[in-house]
Length: 112
Image 1: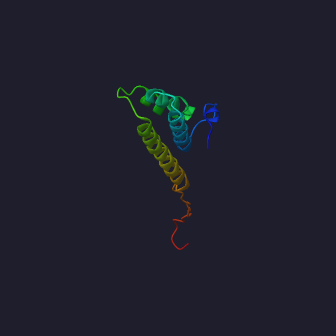
Image 2: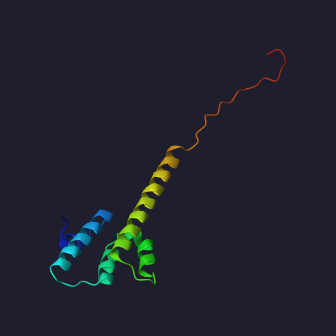
Image 3: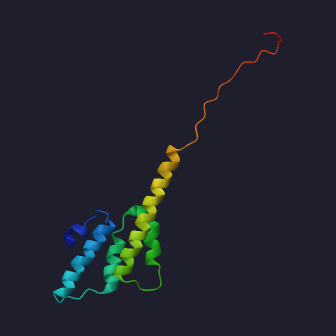
């Protein structure tokens, strides 16, 4: 299981790590300590990698408060969308139309 200290390092999290953080938070709550839901969500959002800055800003500016479970679902959807986009871009690059042009020299004189 992922430790909270490892998660809070500078390593960018994946959705799996977010889910593991959710389990750690659950264990903390079971011990009787209180961590607000908004703090949990904010912590996960803050740990998103730099490539996710647009999505991170989108999440930060949402007016409605979000539950950790909702955030995890949104992260999974975003990760799936990014993976799909990456695959489509790779496929498009591999399928570039290539043509060989053959030039034929024509002799316009009759009989040749």
